Length: 295
Ligand SMILES: CC/C=C\CCC/C=C/C(=O)SCCNC(=O)CCNC(=O)[C@H](O)C(C)(C)COP(=O)(O)OP(=O)(O)OC[C@H]1O[C@@H](n2cnc3c(N)ncnc32)[C@H](O)[C@@H]1OP(=O)(O)O
Image (cartoon, rainbow, N blue to C red):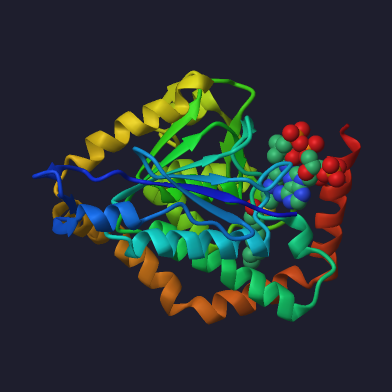
């Protein structure tokens, strides 16, 4: 299934003399800005607009397949090196669902080599998003279990649609699997140790109002206002000088990132040996069957 990320690149923050604008503090020609055109390949479309918006578009539920993860990382990297882009809003192209998390079919009935490549892509997505120099804002317009919650937690600020039917959380134990240490650390850094300990063991999904109460999301607004609120929040975050904000972000996140970088290969080996166990394959299969039967 084709995943498509729709990216909108920031217009220049400030125009100078009609022919220059500031991009990350560097003067660049207006002609250069104009030469930046929407780009697309099979799965990525970039449009220029007032804000940079990255939309996950992998029907029906934005599950994070190997293709989606790879494309996501490439797209984010492109924005990271684009000096005209200082912030990204991450959202879903579909109403009612932000992301269903990792694509379970990528973790069932495949080879060890496939699992290793998949897990490396999950790590890469996390390293790029959690370590981004840009301001990242999650516009959570629907449910967001497991890997979807991880992506939202990687962002600097989270706005969620105010609907108790939409839930967010790391529910891995409900599938009979375990959130790895760096998922856990991302959650600890977001909501603290005690809440994380309880949430992870129970595999708890929090309806939007409860997610706000525990600080898993920062703001609730009506579904229609999720994106416009994200745009407004982005202006506020971009008003802070980049260098000061970026260094502060790095001070906060570097120890967590370094921990995965240091143990990256061991983490892949651990994932492969865990996921290839017969008992784990069976649990995942039962979970998938239940998902399909609930209709
Ligand atoms: C040592 C470390 C080891 C392991 C670490 C692994 C870490 C794992 C992290 C993860 O992210 S695991 C994935 C967890 N995700 C979930 O539990 C979400 C499951 N899905 C849902 O709860 C719901 O689908 C929903 C997201 C709330 C959407 O509900 P809705 O009613 O709108 O859709 P429906 O359930 O009918 O689903 C449509 C369609 O999509 C398939 N589907 C759903 N989620 C996934 C998924 N994560 N991966 C693959 N496929 C998924 C579902 O089966 C349906 O398929 P069908 O149309 O063919 O029946």
